[in-house]
Image (cartoon, rainbow, N blue to C red; front, side, top):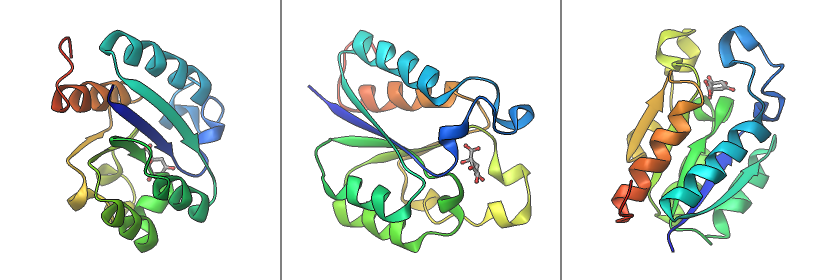
Length: 146
Ligand code: DQA
């Protein structure tokens, strides 16, 4: 069974109450519950990891116990050469997701260390972006009803 890791960066643990006008009112637990249900329907295995610490995110990637990842690196998207290097080092496909569209926000969010190495990006689609990413990866790995 295809194994997907959903990697969530800093401050995403506060979804639901964090700037709801930008990020919506769904909590991370609610988003993950709905993704788990979607993954069950697609017949793929899914695991979730959120951290506010760059090194913890990198250590989770190094475990390399998955076939592909869905990555919302949050602010580390715009700052972390280390996270980019980790994704290159493990050499597994990942889809980049952002709830908002960073390219329409402040100029510092236009800097992106992950975009050119992601197989695909969904930005500005809210939590639906994670579902699009999951479907895309399931398709890529040959799940029949994706
Ligand atoms: C984000 C966009 C980033 O610019 C920001 O730092 C986040 C969340 C998003 O999902 O829209 O924390 O990745």
